[in-house]
Image (tube, rainbow, N blue to C red):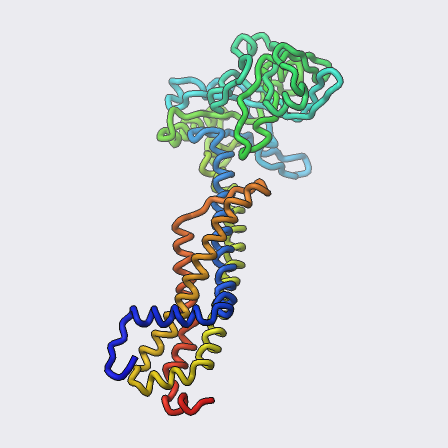
Length: 416
């Protein structure tokens, strides 16, 4: 780069690459800080996306066009208020009214449900599971079938038949390898005949969806659980005709129940209706908070890596004072010197970023093998991480580059 020579970007990159290669160990240690930070960014975003997807899958198991109606709260004689769902304000009659096509044309299926924890016994084996009393419509609302046998029918519901449909996990715990169809399980002295086994959900979804026992709601109320108000239910699942009519179905269900319960103002409602989106929003809020916290830690790691780049570049400037002085005495302008060191810093950032993303992708493949966490790699986040690494290299390389550019040629050449 002599006097009058035109220094191209190609020359600058070639010189910067040679400088990085000459000090391999120092360059590797510099990239290590950025590499760790970028890996943390990729895995943090991936774990956050995986957690959100897991929650979304679990909630969407109900169906994308399903509403869940829950009872209101109770207030004791001492003024203590229970949470939502603590009252017995929903009944099987409410569910029947919601299933009226004329009153609610945008509702295609309704399933009241009451649940409690019970211990089922088969022979000498017992297992505690969730007992759900519901109607044949539950299968349609929850989009759930059976692998063997059949689901409960209207005839079972009408006669309060002592029959039960079990989840796959419940079957494995009670029967091991024995075919459960036709076998009898006992709860509270009542024998229930197993008539079907539900289709299993994938392993990344809630275990409770595979561990349950379903009986006709009439059997639940009259023979198994009973209670003072045998018509009351824990919740009512409402399925809209499509995802597009979910809002209309919500309005129809809300209006119909307000009228049935003789409530004039919506704020005084003794029930609540949750949509899948509202449940999903609430469930993912914790994941979002955790992701932000982890991202903050990753950014701190990147800043540490950036400080490492600045320190190494300052050392590089000190070591190459005579080289800088020679170039300036031969006509190199300060901006060319500055550009030289900025390119070196950005190359270190780029290399650290690429290696960090590569390590992050490897971690995304290996982590699910050892934990139950899902890692979903985001391509935009990976590209952004590489750009961030280069940006950090440039930002933290500005001061060393500026310091090099300001060196007086005579002072640099005179330096030992």
